[in-house]
Image (tube, rainbow, N blue to C red):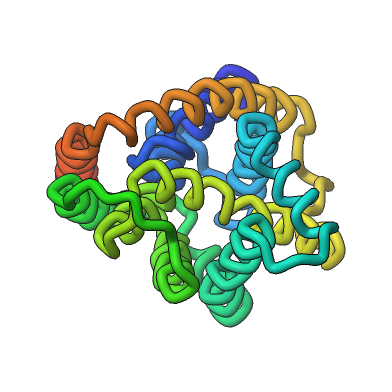
Amino acid sequence: MDVIDSIILGIIQGLTEFLPVSSSGHLEIGKAILGDHSVPKESLLFTVVLHFATALSTLVVFRKDIWSILQGIFKFEWNDDVQLAAKIIVSMIPAVIVGLLFEEQLESLFGGNILLVGFMLLVTAALLFLADKAKDTDKKVSFGNAFVIGISQAIAMLPGISRSGATISTSVLLGNDKSKAARFSFLMVVPLIFGKIAKDLLSGELTYESTNFLPISIGFIAAFVSGLFACTWMIKLVKRSKLTYFAVYCAIVGLVAIGVSLYTN
């Protein structure tokens, strides 16, 4: 993978991480188009690094919210900030369980399986379409909601299922306010990504013997910068209830991916 490819994939990751169109699915399609023949493990390494970049961009965009949560925790009271932190922890449980029990199986899916990506994008399209039909409310995410949303996040580990699309759609379908749903969706993934990076570093899974540092570094920067833009933009889009446009986009890309996969195989 050269520098230009890394920049392209980094921008794809940064934009699609926050837009409900599946960053993992677009990365797999992008790698297939650019001719990336990395084995699944090496492909996953690049994917994890790009996700780490967008996690950092989330910290920047939601720095006030995160700082408020930290302040609330150290007040040692059962306040709104502590409750939000607790809900985020609850939402992490399904993804942690799935990630630990089915890690190898998930890794094997990140190897250019465009047919799977196509079908999963159709699932994402259906979720977004249904969510856009939900009524506006001012309801906050409950603890029960947090766990169900966490299940959606675990399912979104499949390439082609949009994490933000699945979690925001699930939250909205549960009757929660769309702005609060988007905020919770973006905040809940941050601990998981940093936890995944820490786990891989400690276990030695992210080895660099055969990896070129430059493309990964450039991809990281591209994903971080584009992620800052996309995260801010997505917050505004969710408030305007325009998820149907993303549903149509995912359906088109999904059908094209399926068609290309069947034609080339």
